[in-house]
Amino acid sequence: MKHYQAAIKLDDYLVAEFDHSVVLHGKRSDQVILVSSAVFSALRTLNNDTLYSLDQLTSLINLSINEQTDLVIKTMVNEGLLK
Amino acid sequence: MLVSDFSRDDLIRYLKTTGIGIEIGGFWFQITSPIDDVSDHIIKLYPDAPCQLRRVFIDFPIEVRPVSGLRRWFKPLAEFVFNGSVPFTPLPIDQSPALLEWGINWCISAHVQTHLILHSAVVEKQGNAVILPAPSGSGKSTLCTALVARGWRLLSDELTLIDVSSGLVRPLTKPISLKNESISVIESFWIGSVRGKLCTDTVKGCVTHFKPPKDSVLASHEMAKPAMVIFPRFVVDSEVLIEPVDKGSAFIDLVDNAFNYHVLGQQGFHTLHRLLNTVDIYDFQYSSLDAAIIEIERRANDPS
Image (cartoon, rainbow over all chains, first blue to last red; front, side, top):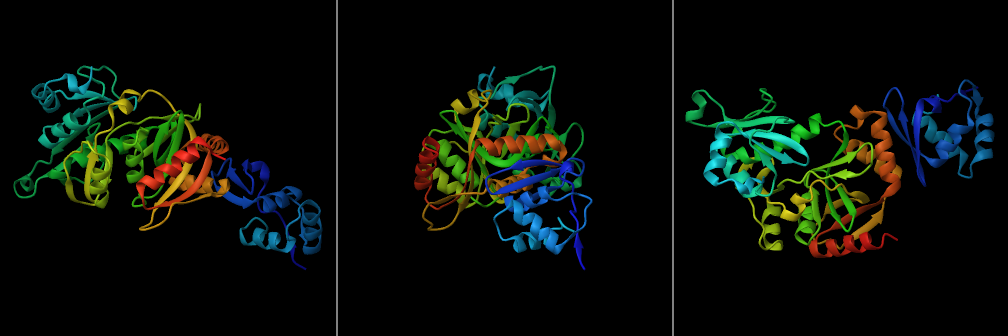
């Protein structure tokens, strides 16, 4: 069964939160990432070193946000925020 | 002392020999050039700029001079020299005024790290600075010039300098660069404007520079508080269309637009974050300059 893990540690990023989106700036890498507020909220719920099944992930993210969980997970995978 | 305090003959003599210190946006340029077009450009377009003959501290020693060698007899070229080195490919000598202006912009954008530098025009009225970031050809400089022609203070037509400590915009008031169709548009729109020599066949087409208003030059030490960021786009026959932009997307656009975001690192992030928390941001499409100005002034007076 496929398991997922957060691909970035939020502690490594500076965070600029706006109304609908969030900008992350890598403290060491200077990498700049734009994510939706929903994706950012999902990232915040994940523990960095934990592997999650799709069900676990869906359940976790579902608890914290109102948007379509499937879409959020798909976006996170596509953008390399989940591995 | 201002440039206009010198007689024409004296100024040309100093430019050809010792050079002359001219303050542009708080930076001192020691400018030397034996080329008449450069002298004429400075006399005509920099009359209100502070200058000193024997200034001790200079930020940028620059020279625009003819390229030596056999080539000068059949296709004379001019080169921009900074601190003894030549950073650009030489250009035809009749493009010397444009070479001087591009060189000055390069000095600032490549060396100043106390400010976040955006590729953007910026104007101010009643304490509200409006930043106009956009790629070349979007109508940014034309709109900026039109606003200046209608009483807005020019801070810069090309480089917006945001102080990383205060978040305020530092003026870099110098001649406004316009090209191709924009030149005749502004000549009709801004009655009484003064422009320099037309430099034809440059990499950007036909280029010239317009003299900034004296009030703007004299106020070039007054920082301005950013109030709006407008991404302008000229579209033929378009109505004025203005719509708010998601601030996260605008952040990314401004990172791409900045000359030194990544050089500043975390300071760059904090400077942009503060900017975006204090301004309203819009995408702005226009064709009529008058209609565009009315809309911008309306938004500036009543952001809601």
